[in-house]
Figure 1 (spheres, one colour):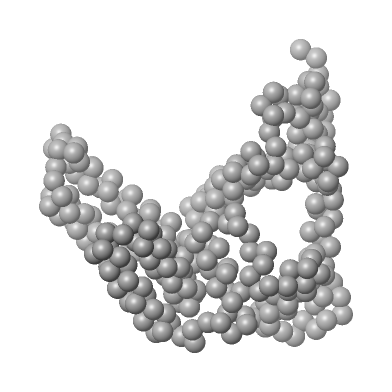
Figure 2: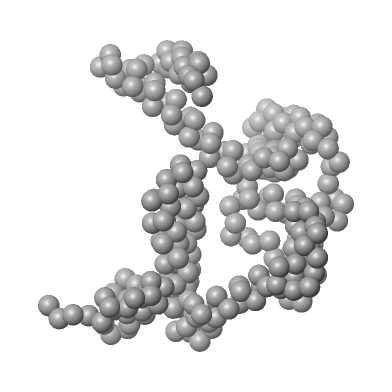
Length: 273
């Protein structure tokens, strides 16, 4: 086996860029990688970002290193495809974001005062983003909130944008009143067995719940992930308890499983923190 010069590249990022260039080579590259385009790779990019978040939630630092590498690979992949099409490359991507960071941090890289709170700096950041949107011709308040975002995250971003211009409830109490109103409307749609109306009202309720999360300072996506984890953990405990008797959930009934759920819940609450 002949030595490949790619093994001798000392810089990690340079080596990764060259690996991707080789994978995409139309004559000697990988057939699968050659066939991909921006749209087919985008779902993997989103998936890798979530896996990074998951590793952080679990405080698994070796795993996080690997997941960050997978996410970096996605950037390099898009950069290589952009280079092939003559749009951009990894270096231009890095230059552009570097320029953005310098422009948005005049208190670090310029002469602006650092005597500001984190909230003041956040407002400056948002003002800078607004100026960028205006430069791009995005005049509407809600323009350029990405359609591809998870729906729950996009709901929060839309609401934040509207709140900046005063379109917002002043406190969480009024949001709770709106949740009660939307819940009544969903019940009414259910009573009339109108699928389209049910769909609409269910969406409205989720949207207002996202708004409540914003008012309470809760990340709704994170909260739902935690709820998913809690459900998974407690249901596995139900499975474990039934398995000790040689049974499975389908051999049980709702009343029994509900009692086992309550037992798992009580056990969690009594466990030392």
